Image 1 (tube, rainbow, N blue to C red):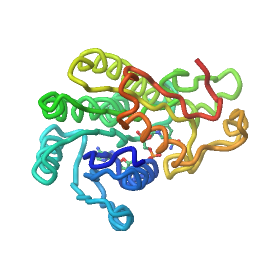
Image 2 (image 1 turned 180 degrees about the vertical axis):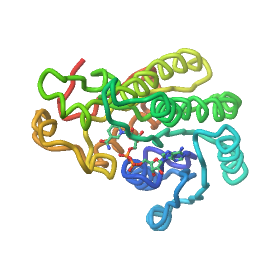
Image 3 (image 1 turned 90 degrees about the horizontal axis):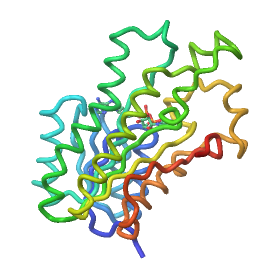
Length: 255
Ligand SMILES: NC(=O)c1ccc[n+]([C@@H]2O[C@H](COP(=O)([O-])OP(=O)(O)OC[C@H]3O[C@@H](n4cnc5c(N)ncnc54)[C@H](O)[C@@H]3O)[C@@H](O)[C@H]2O)c1
C-alpha cells in the first residue's frame, strides 16, 4: 500500500540531491507535492508527474519569511491542505573557529536553522486546524558530533572537514525539533529529524577520503537511503514517533 496516498507535502530544497530523491520517493508513495527551492526544479517536476503525482513548483527563499508564507499559501490554494513539511533546503560550510567569520556564521545559521524555524512556523497553523501533520527536518551527523573537530590529527584537514557553523546550525535543528514535537503532539502533529552521514550529492563532491574511511559500511550513502527514512517518518504509521533524530549514516556515529 502507498504510504503517502493523497497526502500533500511541501519539500524545500527540492532541486538538490536529497530533495530530488525525496520528491521522487514521495511521488511513488502517492503524495501530491509542492517543490520549493530558490533554483528551478528542472526535470524533477516531470519525473514526479511521470509517477502520476500532482505537483507544483514554487520558487522560494526559505530564509525570507514572506517567501515562506507565500509558499504555504500557494500550496493551500492549489491543494487545500498541507499534511507534510520536509525541510531539506540548506547550505554547507567548512572551517574551524579561526576560519569562520561572523558573516559566515550568520549565513549558515540563517540558511540551516532560521529557515527551518520559518517554514515550521508557517505550516503549523494549517496543520493544527486539521489536527494532523508530519514535519521532517534535515539535520546532519555533524549536529551530533560537534562539526567534526579533530585538529590534533591534521590541522590542515580542518579547513575542509571541520564544520563549526554547520554543526552548530544542525544541533540547533535538533533542539527546534524536540521543542516543536512536544509543543504540537496533542494536535496530531509529529516533528522529527533525519541526521544523514555523508551522502553522495553536489554538497559532498569534495568529501575527503580520510573521512570516507571512517564509514563502517564502507561507502557513502545514496540520496535514496535518506529519502526512505523521510518517507517512513512522514507516513501515517509513524504517528507514535516524535521528537526523534534518526541516524542514516552507515554506522559513522552511534548514540
Ligand atoms: N549531502 C550530504 O552528505 C548531507 C549530509 C547531511 C545533511 N545534509 C543536509 O541535507 C540537505 C540537502 O543537502 P544536499 O546534499 O541535497 O545539498 P544540495 O546542495 O544538493 O541541495 C540543497 C538545496 O537547497 C537549496 N537551498 C539552499 N538554500 C536555500 C534557500 N535559502 N531557499 C531555498 N532553497 C535553498 C539549494 O538551491 C539546493 O537545491 C541540507 O540541509 C544538508 O545540510 C546533507
